[in-house]
Length: 345
Image (cartoon, rainbow, N blue to C red):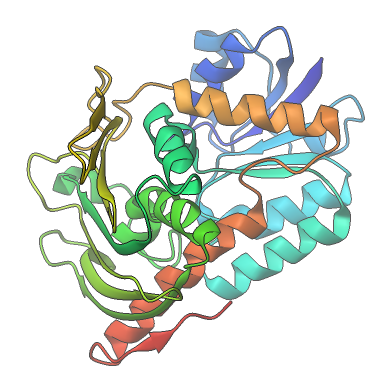
């Protein structure tokens, strides 16, 4: 039985708590921390689980072997460093941190400490994504020549009126790092094993195009992959009423369209395969938490398996860093008027 210290009881909590309830035979919340008294009280009353107003109660408890960090991104590096110093395994909400430099420092801390750490980039665990991964690995679509990624989300102004949200000091960036990061991570995880990581980008991002906010709420980029494939990214939180994230993969033998939790595969010889999307809208609109926790639960289960089996989880901080490098390159290109930027790896 793994004993977990939860740090952060805000917006990200619900799917984690639901996942841990499903995994109650393997893990239990030992203590939960928030710096806000009202959140601690509400959590204790609703969940019936112990709370604390001291981080030391989690980091200094030898019975707690996992720390789940669900706090704003700007706090991640320091909290992960404390967890590593205490010898705790770490489940970290995305993103790694607010800057590429801090994110790289976080990865180094984890790897030096030798603890097991996973990042909540749960889109990799969608059944439709798993089927596409299998098809690409088996060469079912032939050589990949195009990869087109779209994230057309909607967030009302009230979403950004929450203190700190969409600021560089707390979040690091806007739509790319806070919302599109899930789809960008999934896209890269699907394509990179084929020998074609993103090599060069030409990007544009606009701060506060449709919202009162400090960072970007719309961004676009053209991509060139190492294997010669080309592609695009467009992401926004201004696409009312919001729609499913979409990854299109064009191959020399067929094409795949991954839209939300659905997948279609079409081959030149006339064959067709489809996985229907599930009933949940996916948090694409005004309610960012309107999605099933099934993919969170799958990532949590893989993380627990990794601890018990002495292996790396599927989404390590090192693996998550690739998407931070992609976002860094898009924003750097935008700052240079769309000039080509090679990725820092």
